[in-house]
Length: 204
Image 1 (cartoon, rainbow, N blue to C red):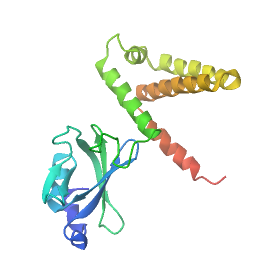
Image 2 (cartoon, rainbow, N blue to C red):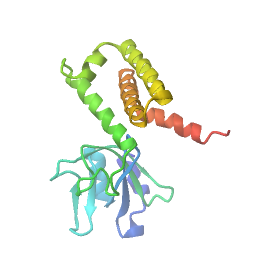
Image 3 (cartoon, helix red, strand yellow):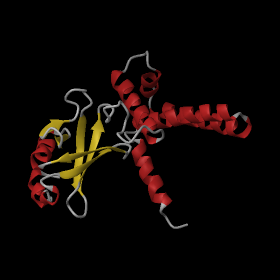
């Protein structure tokens, strides 16, 4: 969304405010629900950081001003009635003041994998010999791909003859190395999720 598109939003329908659904750009998980007036939305677009209007205090506030858990805005779009906005963000920390990832509670799954990808990216940027991730990435894509193959075999063997605990452990190793391989190729797990989503709705 660009500032000149704001005029198409129906702020008057709810007394000058529109609900703003905030979604993690990587996991697509809903993080929180806030409200924006025209000025808050303009500030969001201009600053690149999620800014809201507090109904209780009657003023604008930028997410993370006191906690440091800011939200870098990737995209803003509207719903079909143009009276609600969807804010896609990269969160710098928990969205909820209670310390949870989302105001709707913590969950495993994509959140854990997103955290794993962020850790891999941080280790890659830091470099050095102390991090296994950094050393693995420095060895090149072919070596990382080889490790995925090795971990896949170990996972298959655990599935065929190992305990449940062993299988889960080997599956975690496989997912980790797969995430490293995707990073090495400039890809990410959400791109894999897109393929899975397409297959989920494909006709049998």
